Amino acid sequence: MESDNRLITGTLLRRLFDPAPVLNEMGQTCYGLYTGTDGITPPSFAGQDFTSNTSHYLVSGNAALDPGDLTDAINQVTSKGFGIDGASRLIVLCHPLESEVIAQFRAGQTTNGIVSKYDFIPSNSSIPYLTSETVVGQIAPAEWSGLEVNGSYGPAWVIPSYFLPQGYIAVVATGGANSGVNPVAFRQHANAAYRGLRMIPGKDQRYPLQDSFFQRSFGSGVRYRGAACIVQVKASGAYTPPSWNWE
Image 1 (tube, helix red, strand yellow):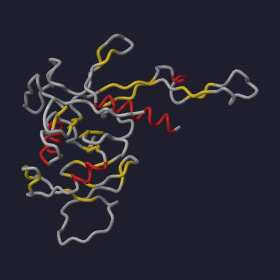
Image 2 (spheres, helix red, strand yellow; image 1 turned 180 degrees about the vertical axis):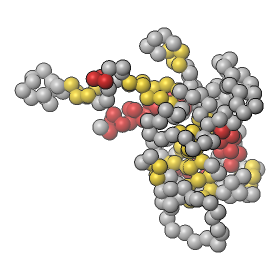
Image 3 (cartoon, rainbow, N blue to C red; image 1 turned 60 degrees about the horizontal axis):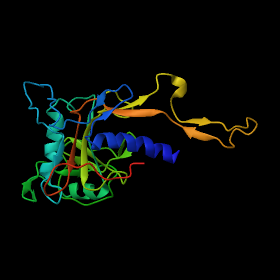
Image 4 (cartoon, rainbow, N blue to C red; image 1 turned 135 degrees about the vertical axis):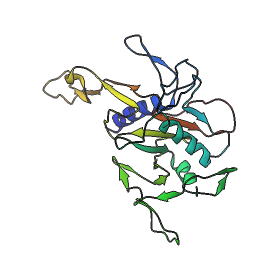
């Protein structure tokens, strides 16, 4: 069960973080998020026109994460029309070390020469703390879709996980588990009998657990190329996907 969960989650995350196109079983090219190098231009939205070099794989330009990186990623997603209505929610997926950096961002304060636009506000799951300030508006819940929420930065909820690589953050517009508006789709066999985690009995039907094994058939693909944005935290150079054992 644990291996199956890691396999599914890892496959979906790899498709999100790795821009390399792949060929599916039909011989068709499946793309990641917008890269700005494949000649595909994001469609216009709300009177905005985008260029063919628009990329949703960004590099921070600093050795440490700063508020501008987070704001740029949020703007890349919302400018394409995602995460701005009640059907979806902006979340920031990151390693706990990156979430600790984000937790220090305060509106008007400077980090790495960049002034923060928003305050990080702890969620309901935060440990008790004292403050002389007043929170205006609703704070983030303790959890969302079964995931712990660390807090909020502007319109996005910060969700840390050790399953995510260090040095990267992902801003994602999502409708929750199994939502049709999620940027990455989970693909299953057209025949319902071949879906899910299946146990194949062993050769001796009297003892089906003996020599049995588990099997699952699935795939993943990006549904909306503009519904997420990845930031790699490094001083210079082009974006490179994480070298990470997703499974």
